[in-house]
Image (tube, one colour):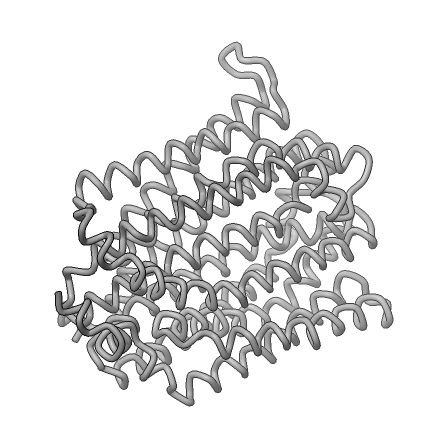
Length: 459
C-alpha cells in the first residue's frame, strides 16, 4: 500500500510539480547561457548550442542512474523494508561519484577534439571547445546533483530539489549578467565568464542539497551494513539504471548525429534547432517530472504487490501529460513569433521555428507517452526489452527516415524533425505494448531479494 490515503492524483501532482520546476531550472542554465551568448553574437549561441546534445547525453545518464537508486529505495519503502533504504542512498552516492569523476576526466582530455567530432570548424570549434573545457570538466557536480535529487525524490522531498535548482539558476543568471555587462567594476569576461558562472552556480546548488540530505534528513549508514549489502544493492541499482539509460542516451546520441547533419544545412538551421529545443524543454521537463513522479508511485505499488494500482496510475499519468503537452505546444505555435523573437529577428529562422512547432504539436504528446512508460517499466525492474528494441527502432528506422526526409526529399531541417517524430511513434508502440504484457509484475527488487538473497535480507 502507498503510505498515505490521499488520492493518487494528488500525490502525483505533489511529487511532480517541484520536479518539473527543478528540471526547468537546470535546463534553463543552458538556455540562459544561450541567451547571454546570443547577445554577443548568433555565432556564439549556435556554436555552444551544438554542444547541447552532448550535455543532454550526460544529463540523461546522471538522471537515470540517480533515479535508479531512487526506484530501489522506493520499492523497499513500499515493501516496508526500511532498514535497506539509507544503505541504498549511500551506495548510490558512492557509485555516482565514481561515474561523475570518469565523465569529467573524459571531458578534460577531450575538449579540444569534441567540437571537430560534432562537425564544427574554425572559430565555431574554438568557441565550443573553450566552453566545453570549463563546463564539461565540472560535470561531476551535475552527477552528484542528480544523485541527491534522486534521494530527495524517493523521500518525497521534491520541493527541496526545486529550491536547490532555483538557487542554482538565480546565481547563474546574476553572474552571467555581471560577466556580460561588466557590472560592479568587473571587466566584461564574455564566454569565459558565462562558463565559469555556470560552474559556480552548480557548486552553490550542490552544497545546498548535500547539507539538507545529510544534516536534515540524516542519510547515513553503518560501515558493516554498507559492506554486507553493497553487492546486492549495487546489482539492483545497475539492473534498473543501466537498461533505463540505454534508450534515452540513444536518443541523445541520435541528437548528436542530427546536430552534425543539421550543421550541413547552415548556421541558421542550427540556430532554429537550438531555439526550438530550448522552448520545448518546458514540455520535456513536464513529461519527465510526471514520469519520475509516476515511477515513484509505481515502484511503491510494485513493492506492495498492488499491480492493478500501478496500472491505473500509469494510465492516469498518460492522460494528464499527453493532453497538457498538446495544448501547450498549440499555444506556443500561435505565439511563436513573439517567443522566438526573444532570441532572434531573422525571418528565416523564425519561419523554421514555427514549422518545427507544428510537427511538435503531435510529437510532444507521443514523447510524453515514451518517457512515462519507460520510467514506469524501469522503476518496476522491467526495462531491458523495451530499451533494446527501442534503440533498434531508433537506429534502423528513425535515423534513416531523418536522412530520407531531410536530404533525399530535400525537406532540410523540417524533414529531420518529421523523421524524429515517426521514430517516436514507433518506439511508443513498443513501450506501451511491453507494459500491457505486464511482465513487470514479476521483476521487482523485493521478489529478487526473497528468491535469491533471502538470508541477506532477513539479517
